[in-house]
Image (cartoon, rainbow, N blue to C red):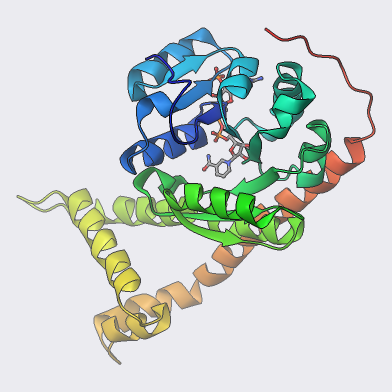
Length: 294
Ligand SMILES: NC(=O)c1ccc[n+]([C@@H]2O[C@H](COP(=O)([O-])OP(=O)(O)OC[C@H]3O[C@@H](n4cnc5c(N)ncnc54)[C@H](OP(=O)(O)O)[C@@H]3O)[C@@H](O)[C@H]2O)c1
């Protein structure tokens, strides 16, 4: 795929093309963004070839190339690689060129203030917390920017709205909360569905695929929650009549404190993010290693 350098609308670049970047690329393509508007970089040639084949977009192993060819650059590498990604962006651009870019880091626990610092205090630096449903345009995406001019904020919000709902948060700490509430949260639901699927396997049905029944029940249950103005507690009571079978099941859930487990899971994700924030801030005074353009 030839990356269209003269595309009329914004060109989107990804540094890192793992699980999150791929989910976002899928979402953008589904939303109508065309493939030659997107470029992604990977660490290895194998991943580059895979990404090109899978999405029909341009890919490279050179982060400088993504930086110079894109208007909006998403940093989608592991938190420990964000500084390198920023160094690569800076190395491939003049100071003036850098000022024309919008950079959005998706890395959990890497503070915006540091990312901006690594990008020579680029004023259009954002941090975000997406979640996996961005791939089906149903993401819950937290966005954090500080002292960002309104038109940049509007532009970035509009772009991310292609992937789901965008929630502007007011601080790094709120962004960390969003890791627990949204970023990590799809995994809690999948863990529950996985457990329900396992349990359902004890009840083999002659002509019916039990996993399919679990999935359809999950789909219907979440669609009902999404489409009706009732809260989860009300809907729970709609299923559980007093003295009935569901009440019996809910008694077990309550006795075994599954709500407490979910609370603790969310807290663990938030705490880990907070620890990462403090770690990165404590490392911020370490000397920098110079990066050469590739
Ligand atoms: N997964 C989620 O649901 C989720 C949710 C919210 C936020 N995030 C954030 O998104 C970021 C990425 O997570 P992930 O789950 O997508 O991780 P991942 O699947 O491990 O992907 C990491 C990607 O980074 C690439 N990479 C590593 N070093 C690089 C470098 N120096 N230059 C360019 N690319 C490099 C890897 O390339 P190779 O494939 O060639 O090794 C790989 O494509 C993390 O910071 C995470 O906190 C993830």
